[in-house]
Length: 202
Image (cartoon, rainbow, N blue to C red; front, top):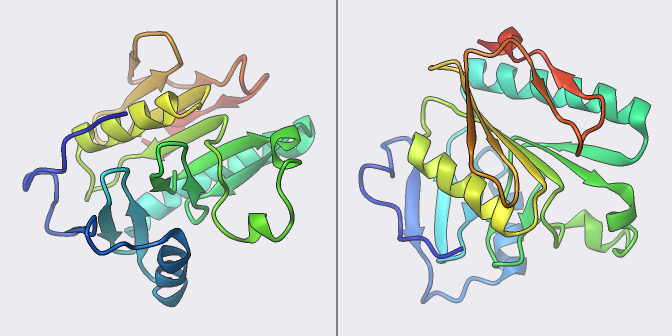
């Protein structure tokens, strides 16, 4: 999905955004860069912007972990897919390399890849993605990212804003739904039976 480069207001003081379009940074080089600097979180946009983020704050990390843990508990019982946390990188069809805070992928989709291929960035967009807003994020930046996930094949996306107690629900072909101060949110039908008590992280 086409998007303008990040503005100075969006590139907050806690993030570094570098234009690497003319550098020719390959996927292999980017993977090595991430591996060599694993204390940092990095993403590469489809516009070839390298976004370098510091480690998550304590509260943000706790919120992400709660969501990933609850999702994993459900996925282990459901058995049809696997969960990854914020350290997993995905190369999307638009060439961006993203790392959502939580994601779920149907097992049958992973059968197309070898074990060796899955040791690096997965060349797919997860079926479900979630982003939990942190102090270093802007709402517009995360909204663009969620729209990108949906445009690249995600079937369900949650953008959780714990500061305003809002959840934005993304589904292909549907307008974004904003839930104000919800107690819980349902993953049906993509995540059948999964209900997240989002009030737990307000």
